[in-house]
Length: 87
Image (cartoon, rainbow, N blue to C red; front, side):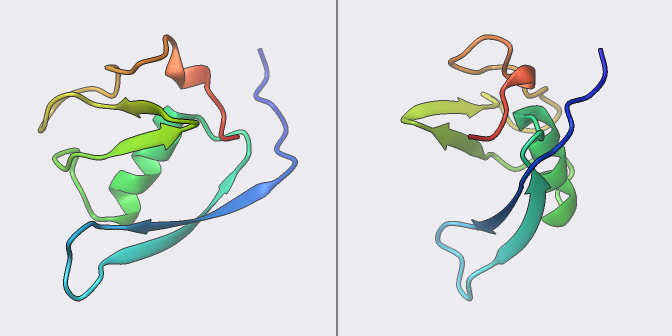
């Protein structure tokens, strides 16, 4: 199945909680970006090596890894999040 064609680009600001001075990044992502791909993007832009906890909250539903370190991004509240697109 071919990848969907993007129609929009979202600008997302990512800020670490409780950091002083604030640590943040601004990234642009296509509307076809999956949560799995967004996870990879965040790892790259923040300089992480899959060892920092983070989660996504969409419409009061939480998505994220349940453990630190080498965990895969699979423990979510909705099945098959790799196909979930940004709203």
